[in-house]
Image 1 (cartoon, one colour):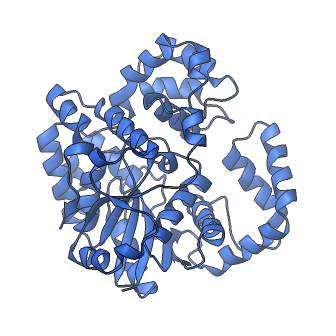
Image 2: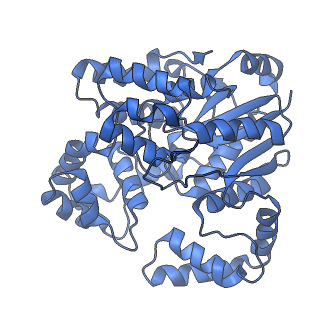
Length: 401
């Protein structure tokens, strides 16, 4: 059985994700689609709308066959580390291909770009450093450097966010896997950051989340698969809330105002004295949005600040993150009947162990994931639901469809 890997967040699973999963199976001629999915905190430094188990259920009810969790150390990271962790997991799970969505929609320009970069890597790194000295964030500096070096030679626009992330997958495959073949499909309709619902078939996850918080789950019923709507509606009915950064503002403010700058400096990605700026903004902000607008600069993007705050909330240190360079296990979040058949046939060939019960695992990466789950639980205002979430990693079995 051929398996295609996809890297996802599903916050929440929507019609574009359905198309991606279906087309990935088709273009790679695979019987199985394996998703590596971020856990309760996401790559751009955001708490997920609802927990990883429910997001895995959405995917499995819409045709994905297996969902593994991308450990926190790789999920809440720069694109290159995010891609590296995901590709290593897909390789360990026996995938023969990876398929990602991109603005470009053709794989050849990605392969060409990789060769161009290999030929000029020292000059590229120099240009990126020079751009960052001008006060640009790393993504902006990298995009400008790629443009300056390769604009006349490359057909790939790396200023587009999905092209850039896809390029990181291509780079990771080149370095870490000799058996995965990359594919890409054209992203359809709404772009990642679009905040307005598209009244055709596909709306962005950003616009769907925004609409949910403004007008309720019912308002997005026509923009997500029926299974997603059902899971969202049931979860909201049982728990009374979905989560965003506003759910954690009091905790963030408390941490910033009760810790010294020197202790905050231990937190991963807390660099260049930004803790002083965070403390100052926390003293004078009434809510999360106000705080973010006071902290954000050209160098410190919204995403970078959110990632710092995520690490602050989870007490994740530089030392911890620097000691983990590769995923140590495949954390099973769920599977359907086809996924179970695939595992029965090939799990003995996997190069990482499969785990489903954190009670029996004590690897350092598990410890950080457990801590992240407990931090995520703090967003629930209902103390009973909060306590349920604190122990969810220990009591939840994989979702079986």
